[in-house]
Structures are given as structure tokens and as C-alpha cells.
Image 1: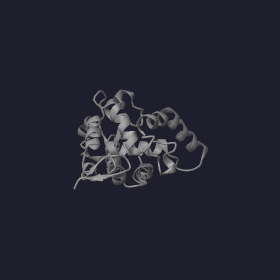
Image 2 (image 1 turned 180 degrees about the vertical axis):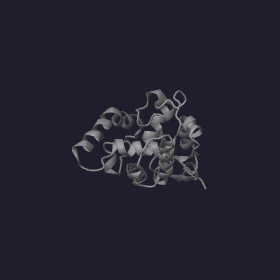
Image 3 (image 1 turned 45 degrees about the vertical axis):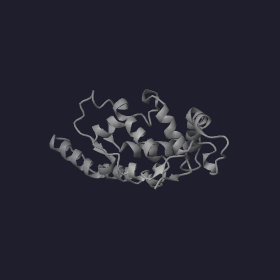
Image 4 (image 1 turned 90 degrees about the horizontal axis):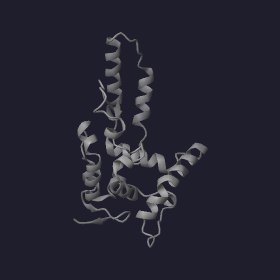
Length: 195
């Protein structure tokens, strides 16, 4: 089983599902599908119609704040598989995983897994896993801080509560994400300081 920091996984799913990486038909279809399935409803419920959205990319996609508000108001069992907590999606408590790899340490974890499998008599080579590790570690477009600073402390804490079991089960911390929002009161795209 391979896991990722719950907030990074959530942010990655948000960016990947609601925005196009390029102009391919696949990317256009994916963004349109998630707009129709989730985006329209999220925008209708959480966007203030009296405040026009300045950034055109949010015309057909929720802002990260709107997406998080949707998650906070939704029962996790109703989440899409891309943002469903691991403990509900992969059932790690019900299956006997012998190893858990983390995307943050994927190269090292893969080497350990291959070593273990080779000790058990399998002849596994490391070339493919190094490529996979490289792919998993090079998917960041913008720093998480740009997204999480808009949430404010209360939203970050509430989001942590939704994913708390994943945080504890896989030994992840709410920091540094809470500190990104430490001096803000999340109010969407307009940040108020309370220093």
C-alpha cells in the first residue's frame, strides 16, 4: 500500500480533477466531468454571487476554499474516491498489509520492498520503481502554502478532523499546514490578518 500526506493528497486531487494539465481531449473531458458532477453544486452553494470571481480559471471550477467548505459539510462516506480518506477507501484495518510506502519517501521505501521481496526468492529489479518514485515526487505545481493560507486555522483544523484517522494511522502531522494559516482568518480569496 502506498500513502501520501492527507492534505497533499487532497490538494493533488483538487488540482487534478478540477483543472486541466493541458488541452488534450482527456484533460478537457476530466475537468468537465468533475465540474458537472461536483463543481456546479459547490459553486452554487459556496460562492458569494455578489462578489464576482476575478480569476477566470474559477469560472468553471470551485476555489480551494469552496472545495474545502464542501468537504467540511459533507459526510466522508459520500466523498469521491479521489478525496475519500484512506481508512474508508483502502480498508487498511481490514487487510493485512505487510508494508506501507509513503510517496514522500518512495525511493527508499521501494528499495526496502524490493530487498524484502528478493530475500523471499523473487528476482525484482529496481529500474521501474525508480521511475515511479520520480513521477510521484515531481507532481507539485504550486506550494501548498498558497492554498492552505487561504483556509485559515479553523478550516485547517476542521479538515484535519475529517482525515484524523489517516493522519494517525500513517504518522502524519497537521504541521506545517496549520502554520501556513496561523495568522489568517479564512475568508476565501481575501485574507484578513489578526496580528
